[in-house]
Each structure stands twice: as C-alpha cells, then as structure tokens.
Length: 484
Image (cartoon, rainbow, N blue to C red; front, side, top):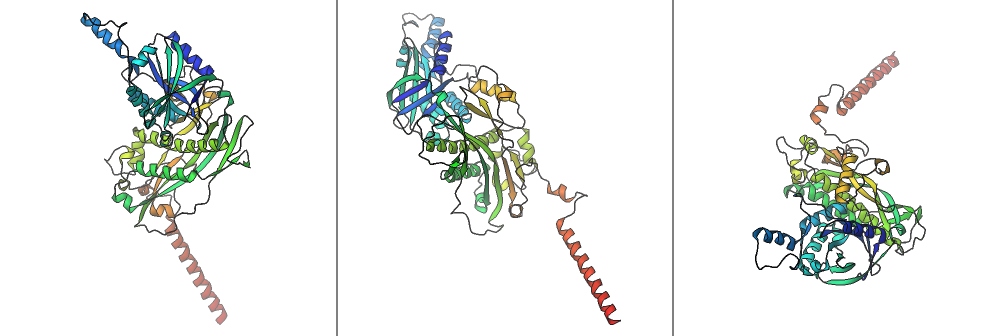
C-alpha cells in the first residue's frame, strides 16, 4: 500500500502558479506518475487538466455557483446567499475517464495515469460527497488498459487555495476506502533511466470454421491474439546493452539503455495438420515496435523489463483501437474488394465469414515527442495525418501550450505494422505481403486477365511438353544413326 507520495517539484509548482493566477474556482484533471510495487512509495510526475467538454463546459464546477445564479434570477427571499451556502463540486466523471483513456495511449512504459486531482477550496472539497470522488476514480481505472486496471490503488490529490496546501489520499478501487498519504515534493524526473528496444513481431492467427460459424469479428479475434501474445511475452529474457541481464540486478549508471527481448521457443505450438475445410484463412499481424520504459532510482531491472513488455502490448492495443475507430473512406476503400458490394460497415462490425478476398491494412506509426525534463511521450500517425494533427492532440490531451517542434520529433519506426488476411491456400503457398511492401487491395480478376502475365501452371506445362518433344527427337535421331 502506498503511504508516501513524492511529486516532481518543478511541474507541480508550475501547475499551482497557473491555477493561482487564473480565476478558476474548481478544476479536475488526471495524475501521471507511477505507483511502485516494490515499496510503499508513489510518484507524481505531472498533473494534466481535463479539457472542456464537447459542449464547451468545464469538467468540474461548483454546484453552489450554479444554484446561486438561479437564485439571483428568481430573486429568492430568505434563502442562503452564495457566500453562506456550502459549495460542493460537480464532476463529469465520464469525460474525465475518456480523457484518461486518451492520455494513457500517449504514455510510455513506466508512466501511467495513477489518479485524479481536484483544485478547490477546503470547504468545497469537504462539502462534496466521497461517493462522487469514488465514482470518478473508478471510472478512470476502468478506462485504462487491462494491465493497468489490475492495480487496486489510485491517488486523489487535493490542491487547496483556501487555505493554500496540497493533500494526498490513497483510494482503494475495490473497497472504496480512502487513507491519507504523506505528500512531499522533490526533483525526480531527472533521476529516471530510459530503456528502449525494437521489438519485431509476426503474429499469425488461423481462422477456423468454428470462428465463422459463431460470427466472430476481427476485433475479438485480434484482441484475443494480442492477449495470448502478452502471456508469451511475460517469459521473455533480455539483453541490456548487449549483455544478458539478471532480472534482480540494479542498474546504477545513468542515460539510456538498449534492450533486446528474447522469446523462448514455443513448447505448446500446434503440431496437428489441418485441411482447408477446417481452416478458412489466416490473419497476419506483423511489424516492428519501438518500445520504451522509464525506471526510477533504486528499482530493479525486473521492473524496467516488465514495463517494456507492457509498453509493447499497450502499443499494439492502442493502434488496433485507432484503426477500428477510423470510419473514413480509407477503410471503405480497403474493404471494397474484400467484402461484398453494398455491405459497408466499420471494420470491427464485420464477421469473418463476410470477408471473401485478401485484405491488407496499415497500422499507424509511433512517434516520440519531447515532454518533461528529457522524457518523452508518444502519438500515432495515420497515413492521412500530419504533424499539425499531432500537435493539436498534444495541446488538447496533454495541455502542452507550446506547439510541437517537428525537428524535435523522433520517428523511431520506419515502417508501419501491417494487418493482412489471406485464404488458406494463399497462406500455405506463402503469397502474403512482405513486411516492407505497401499494402494494396488485391483483385484476382484483374491479375488473371492481365495480358503481360502468364499463369505459372501454363508455363510449367509448356516447358514439360517442350522437353518431352526434344527427348523424343534425340531418341529417334540416335536410333536412326545407330541402325545405319
């Protein structure tokens, strides 16, 4: 259980100065940090305010303020004035949870959304029911990736301006209990060590007849595949800077470190042979991910390795969600040749039995963005997006006031991950797309009618007939000259 919370002094003081200079009476946002599993410490790297809702309203406001406006309009008599009323907080929990989900995509390993903060007076905070904070924190926990949601603890930080002070509470998601924590500030971001690796993956998922008969979708199939690969990834060993690392060792030297993940040989691989009646197709997800993680002081390398593996899975799931959320013409164009005409739906709503031909889609590329004190966050760029789109998301989601400098970005992935589908015979004949090839919609009818291309079967038959004819002529000539 977390008993001591340490916040990054420079970032938290800057956030407090911003709030004091503004005329905001109430604000809510998320906390980016880390809850250490090896000690009773928690770390707060930054606090990020929740953006305004789609209607332009703040995510947090004072309930008494809204009621006071109504009383002034009606000219209420005998009621309490706004100053005399006990103010309470109104928080849009769903909006805060969605903001936490979007921010979690942009965080690298070793950093996560660990709770929420509230800016208000001490009176407003005490007048707000504990149930309100419980619902908001639970919503944030449920919106995070599955491996982050397993953590039972979250933080609730109250920044009070009357009186001026910081207070922290440890919230149990399971029991809804809140316990006070010791809160102090120090310089912690410059003590983080960065670990980075290029992880190559090639996930091949057979599509069985049962999958089609049960109307299983692409979304469920790929999520199950990523979840199974996450279990396999847990047993991977690592090379750190070219040397086999001991998981319990302490890495004392600073700077960034290069890691190579070593997967063990599969002992439970499929050894049975299947026919085309049992396997109708294969879904292939392959590419290279630049994974990163941050390790705090006095933490074992085992923690950095675990955070790297989580970053790999989080990156795969984030890209899958981004592709499935897209509903523009690019997906429709890619699905046009793979799905029967007139059946236009988002990709995740299509059952596997509806896909008749080969299909290839590119996943977005990961780009690293400078953030705080030499640390980085990430974002994902589709082919149709530019760096301006990336800058807009950073301004909205991460509250980055300065525009992102394109020259400071790190495009660590040269090629995007590719999702392809192929029939059974295409898969066993090795006709899937190479990793570096740009995915295109294939049209077998066009290839068949192409005048400049002959079928391999016809070419082999003609060559065999030609060789047989030559052999007969040589045999006949040899017999004729021998008889003479």
